[in-house]
Image (cartoon, one colour):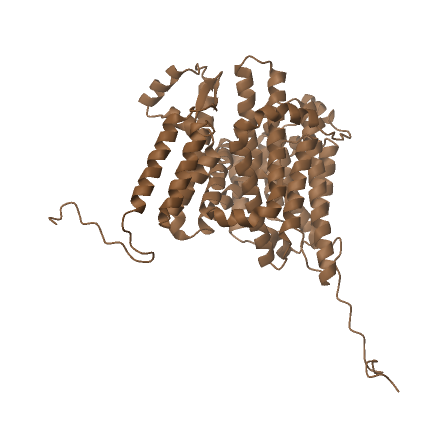
Length: 548
């Protein structure tokens, strides 16, 4: 007698659910997109380290890029493994790994807000070029390591942080950096090379904003168009001496722990906490938002392990000699819709990582100029600025706009000082009155430049709390700003050689501290006044000529 649980002669076993595969066809499309994003970041590292910071090729290709390559291999490999394990457990074949790579905003923030100021200050003190470069690199290592540790720790307290900080305060601060250092910087470069720059920009706008079906992925097509126009216009010229210099860097470069440099750079920790801590917090919260985006697309990843992988990648980069942390990228739903699954992640880490370890990107940079891909970075800046308004309540829009301003002021200060140095101006207090007579308030720009990230966050948070009628919370933000100013972590500045630098010290930022205390007093006094309940419309103020 057949058991009732045995299948009958016509019964068929249920098909086994398809499991995950390490590589599918859509992963190649995903690799083109994600790999191109990482390629542009690596080319920017080479360009900024050579052109802005003046680092020698031995440091760039022998230490910084190999460490960057290891962080890309570790992170992308870990996210691919995470996706494969979860997909196998769920019996799914459509899970897409989290996109991961070099953090664009931290790249610019650390170069222009940490590494360049340290180098200029060292040169202003009379130190030789190589010593100034060494100090600058050590400061970048400490900033990268600190950001990575904050990201890793965020795996355990990210939820609390997210509930405490207004979204408008965080996103607007990030958007201010994106608009100034990334957006405006690359827009100027676009109009300096309009034939190449505007054509590439048009391709990016059509591909990413116009939702037009193109024969190739939009980023890849933009780079191909840019490279072709660069060759045609003479912008790209491969000269033999430069080719030989870059070819000399080709070879296996294995990174070594830079614990001595990190220990020596600890002296640079305090002045740059106003950059390192906020950037670490932004990376944590940005990763949370990207995880939410992935969950909305059908891939719900655990927060703790995802943030830990990100933090470990940045920490490894800092320990091995890179100044540039990594992060989860926006755009997971796009990669998923493209058909990318798991392979695009580990392939990206392998291709980009090996390119860094083998010193190939000097040659690649000669064949693919930054102008061919800078519209992609400009696109990222536009998306970040738009997100600051779109992802916050509409009534918080004034707070978002206020939070943009310190970042723009900091970028303007950078341009102003570069112009003054080019003109041979002497950086002394006598520089300020003539500029003020021309309605250029350089002293205010220099003050906003110091601690600009924290300042933007606190100002935007103040206005959010005012809009929400939480005036005691707004006063608390003002008190925090007053304390930071008093000890010189915000606004306090001094001339140092041909630059302005942070001037920490007890009472160093006294005038700004008093100003913030006045703001706190206004908020507290206003909190004692009657206010309409939320949702009610306040009575209109009579016109000035109304006899009442």
